[in-house]
Length: 357
Image (cartoon, rainbow, N blue to C red; front, side, top):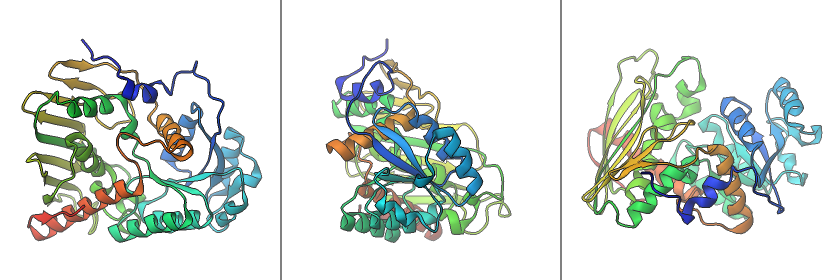
């Protein structure tokens, strides 16, 4: 039998139900970078209750024309990469969602903050701890929010496992396994260019196991060790990791064993083990339906459109000061960047790296 829907996550699951009505303010969002994931976000936002796509920022005029027509965006809300500082004077835009290559995030976030708009940024937040700290500081100085696209932080199966863990259902947590990987295609894409991506699989798919280890265990790790494997140095050039296995240690005694890869398919699984029970998500982070299981049976929750729920929840954070169960702010993302830097350092030196998050 599935575990019943708990009040703590009813709102997240119910945000996609069409019969609910909302009469408050809409979060007016411009998307910066109109690529593949931006398309997914824009489509999802059509079902949002509290967030609406109102602006476009792109370096490709043809894309802007297509998106304008599809989403009814007026020309006055469309910008290119040279002139989007002018959003400062546009009341039709409250926030900008950055969906561009990782290495561009910091400069874009700083510009958006200076324009007085809230910053929503895809993960990883940026390519280094230093850049992340500068983004946080710029947003604080401008008195705007810095939120990161951690869509899984609002996913019902994930939140139920966190609730059960907090309630002691699994007993003392002893172990976490995170498997994140797929075989990457087009070798010319920006994800395989270290100047744009800041790294390989770890900065793209591995970040899910890094972040997932923290919200599943319920603690921040204090050490990491890692080993990198590279079988195709032509496709995966210097600065682009192909496969990294990493272990994390937590203050309560739990350990994590994780895999991040661009050369293996069917890897999207989280497993949490405790002395009294266990929980599994498989798939754990994909766009499609998430499947959850505990030692007491399957978890049965409605399938949600992750990006739609995320944007409505972010509207609640901005408008209502809502505190999500798992944070989605810049400080949360900075912790992941510190872990990633520790993983890379350990893989390079062959030594365990102590973490201070």
